[in-house]
Length: 520
Ligand SMILES: *[C@@H]1O[C@H](CO)[C@@H](O)[C@H](O)[C@H]1NC(C)=O
Ligand SMILES: *[C@@H]1O[C@H](CO)[C@@H](O)[C@H](O)[C@H]1NC(C)=O
Ligand SMILES: *[C@@H]1O[C@H](CO)[C@@H](O)[C@H](O)[C@H]1NC(C)=O
Ligand SMILES: *[C@@H]1O[C@H](CO)[C@@H](O)[C@H](O)[C@H]1NC(C)=O
Image (cartoon, rainbow, N blue to C red; front, side):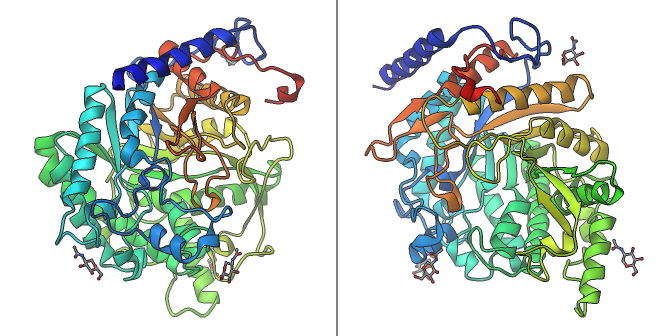
């Protein structure tokens, strides 16, 4: 059964690719369409997913509820299409198919996450759900059999509801609970998993979930909860790092790091000093806030962020800064706690200075940052409104990270990708990956940035948080009306496979069919 369906998948891929090898459109590189630079053989190419977005089986085999389960059951209209993650792509039952798809792409790395409440149903380690443990051990075994290295995130947003009921990441005790969970996971899976990321996208998680009401928990503790969340996540991350480093690394010999996220910010007018400062402030408030404590030589929050939030808090009459303060011991504890710089990047904004914009709350992270962000109308927007295509942004953010934090640890692009409205002929996604990956090659070869890996977001169309199933990011199409959640490769899957095979970008590999796509 398994090997048959494997052949079927590979056959589909082969036949599609024959149909689409044709002459080219791109003027980026040489006439035959092939990039002049290539990715090194040991460059880590993979794809990424997250447990809540694909697993489904929300209450099966002893799994506890995550805050996303509970919240979406209570507020069905929170997602734009009133859907939830109860079934998602049903990967709890279809993980073997997923692994066959990974093999057909030729990826050697798979970034996935563990659902905390599937292992610890009520969040704490007094009780371990054995069926959940079996599920992940089977996935890791199958991946290793397929010669695919698992890269595993401990926390990709699906907090156990029992811990959310105690305040989620605004609760200082979360630092202990996360360390306890990490110990369970390292003990159970560390024989097979050698690359860990503790947490995914601290900025998006705390900003959308605790400052705004865009993601669960929709706390709307604007300007306050958002920084408690950031602070205790950083401390939790650091504790898990040290736990691994001291108790597990000597035997298990793996790596452990952190995944942050950022949109790149360009000054709206690069000749305007205030816009230039605003762009830098945007990057510091969205990325530096999390990266500086971990990756800078001196540790702690960046001086600019510290001063700005302290000033704002004072002016607003708060008795102390809304941004918590690390003790000197904590600064030391957090500093240097990552073996790589994991960064998720999708898009860019144009920044200008502003003290107030419609929709900003006071206080809030936006108001503290004081940056108005817009998109350049020239940038294509193939799917969700926030994701405008600007490929040089990837090269620039990789350079910004290198300039700020040096090359002590390698950069890994842990997510990059684009959404559209769906379908198999996803020319916009093909173009996006070609151009963003070419910019990454330029960052590596021309700028000397130390980039060692890249993960496409995402393997297949999935549950995209508050967008439900309305936006599609997959290399594989998933038929959500089909009881089997049938998966089919898109053109972008063929294109990605070819990039991995040749280590180069062939801009002519998939022919762009009509004038409609000329601006890609
Ligand atoms: C590769 O192409 C880029 C972009 O056109 C160019 O800047 C670079 O000099 C080329 N490098 C080599 C080694 O040909
Ligand atoms: C969702 O439903 C709740 C109560 O049923 C209502 O108060 C709220 O305005 C609705 N939200 C949206 C976005 O429709
Ligand atoms: C989890 O919490 C629920 C609700 O408090 C309780 O009924 C259940 O027994 C708990 N399960 C475990 C394994 O502790
Ligand atoms: C904070 O306030 C001080 C004193 O008012 C001022 O000198 C400084 O420039 C402010 N810093 C920031 C980052 O706003």
